[in-house]
Length: 198
Image 1 (cartoon, rainbow, N blue to C red):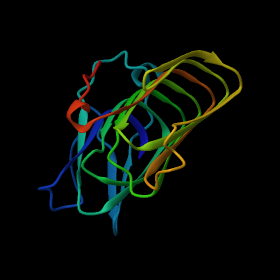
Image 2 (cartoon, rainbow, N blue to C red; image 1 turned 180 degrees about the vertical axis):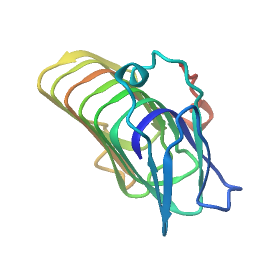
Image 3 (tube, helix red, strand yellow; image 1 turned 90 degrees about the vertical axis):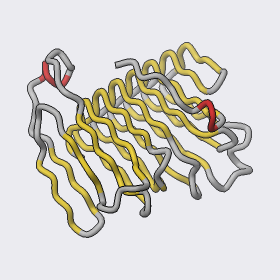
């Protein structure tokens, strides 16, 4: 996906096609080749990217019968990715993220999540009893991991949950370019729902 702004991504076990989509004010170019879905948005003026202009939220619904790799280029803003019903293989976001919320499924094996180019106001919610590692380069301020809060750290931070080495299903989360207001919270299934602040 190229330049994701004000989009909700979710899954539906009843969906038989690869995806179903309803787009907002900007209509992207969508292509399908085999099992690959490509969404390309036109370049937006800076003020639109920052969310100064009111825009209807786009929604993309994905098929749950296949594993998914996600790749975002050109950054993401005001993106909610509820991936709990999917088999997630990887999530890569190049170009920075602002106001990003991700809800993760139980992993199969080691799953990598990478945010390249900085992260601000990012919330990642995963299931309980799943090992996680967070590697941040470029400094971090106001970081929350489960019940632990870190006000600030230097150029590099490498944290692992106590159960990281003992679990085969785990998440490796990497953020480059610095991070501000980031939370990574693992919850039991019945408590996974979080309120959206949009």
